[in-house]
Length: 433
Image 1: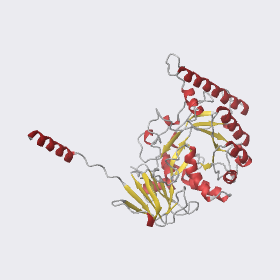
Image 2: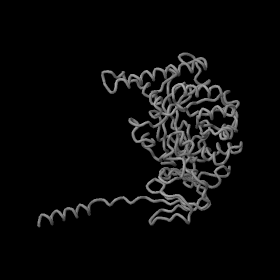
Image 3: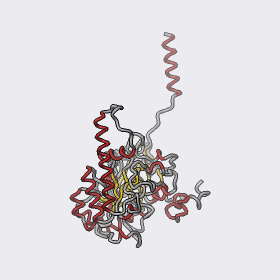
Image 4: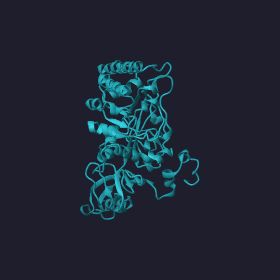
């Protein structure tokens, strides 16, 4: 009996000393015009967030405020899902070097500064998910990385969309054709030679995969490990997405042919002359991530780019997203890219999807981001008004239920309104401590 009492006393003492279970953090965004993307806008809506996930979405009168929740009053505002930028160069990273035109083993992840102030530029534009790419000066310049723009990261791991980059695929593969990759040897000097080099490497990748499959895990039969071939086999197996920089119509069709020959479906990026071949793009079933260039200049390949690209692709039934290619266009003004598409004939709904859900699908992240739906990450953008009005500001940006940008905070506002010295981390260094 004495032993039983002693054990009971120890159990009670342990229970008293143990930390209380952490209460779930509940935030209610209430009163805004909620634009869920996956459904019709809700004029006076409510979004309930619990521990970084969306728990309910609906009209104010239909969604109860849980007891103890933090309520964010958004009356008169517009609430969108976090914007998805399918093509950017934030973070100061680089890719392949001048030693060869095809370097699929390079990883942009290994070169990004996660503390770069350029990420604040994107947050201030409402961007919450981004595909950071190496450059387009190679036929294959390396592996891209998909990032969530969480605030105050210490390492690149704090931004990754996957848990373990050593065992999971956290990005795509950057490929390119056209004039960017045409240079002196060892680079190709013509478009036809560029395609031939790509085809040759994929043939080697097929052979490498065949050897791996025949070995059936036997170390004595396995080929020597080849990082380049491993990355290409991930493409051949449909596990790594190809993001293909291309401008001219004939170059886009070359990219499609390469995909057909080797069994992958690329996401075509830029596609300046998409308006010339919308039917061919639709027949191939390739999604297109396009750009709005709103100032003159740039490479000769873009001379026939038209603002009507979005409308032409939408009419043909092609999945279309917009991207910034930052620093080519400014992440702070990403909404403007789709607004220009609407001005040129694109529907408002498809333009909004082009900033959110369609881009998420191109990255294979549509189950987590791109729309305000139950179970998805609580990535949100609070706008002062109509998403496509020149008078509208991004007021707040939230990632997984955490505020990562607040225009009302002077330290954050500088990133939304200041010049480029802000992103060099020099001008306001003292202010931001």
